[in-house]
Image (cartoon, rainbow, N blue to C red; front, side, top):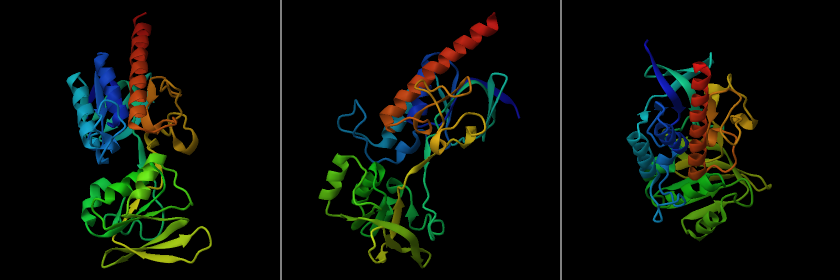
Amino acid sequence: MDTEHTGIAIIGGGPAGLTAALYAARGRAKTTVFERGIPGGQIVTTDRIENYPGFPEGLSGAELGDLMARQAEIHGAIIKGFNPVEAIEAADGHFTVVSEEGVFLADAVILATGTTPRKLGIPGEAEFTGRGVSWCATCDGALYRDKEVCVIGGGDAAVEEAMFLTRFASQVHLIHRRDALRATKCLQERAFLNDKIKIHWNRVVTEVIGANDKVSAVRLASTSGEPEEILPLAGVFIFAGIIPASELVENIVELGGMGYVSADVYGKTSVPGLFAAGDVASFGLKQVITAASKGAQAAFEALKYLDEDTATRSK
């Protein structure tokens, strides 16, 4: 298999990766983005983004992802969608990126692989995935028109998806293990005012129950000593946390708590020439704007690294 050279390989085509691609390409580095799905990353499944500056009326995640991708391409970035990276190897100051499409030799790598949804590990979850169990309300919400569904979780993602599901479902049961939500206050206020959302406090789902090869109910246990409950419904949407997608570099770089890539404020990791940006890195706030910011910073540092490497080799 032939090996193709690129200056900066960016793994992940979400807001961090696409912003990094824009800055790297404008810096005149040959820039290649590897994205396992549609460029835009997880935001393409977001129905409405209202807090990204410059869009006072808001826009869909798919629209923002498309705009970011097109802007990066206009400035010279090569975006390879539906081309997952299978392995990354570091040797002799360079990186070998093995993708589904081929092998690439990169002078620097920016890891922007984001995170993946956390599974509950309960009976019925795997069995009914795609048959009533989902991790994407935007993708599957329309399938539950005039039906009852539940959303598991209490953070921003859970509340936002619960509100989105009210467009279709007759009732959305928001199930949270505590007696208070963790979501942003403005989101909580919207949920409390929505007649279609019913919140089940101090409850956890212990089993997804099915009938006729599809979800028919969930079993709810109490965290406060109340009796167990069976809740009939047609769909289960899980938003119970995230896992950093750092497996490609777990044997290369230093990882922090919960598997996040350890990186400084500039995106530098423990391996020279390998940078991390966005949700996969050990940063605090995880929003589109912070991912974009970290992508820009990582690209800036990667360009500096390439310049310094070239100067060293020319001596």
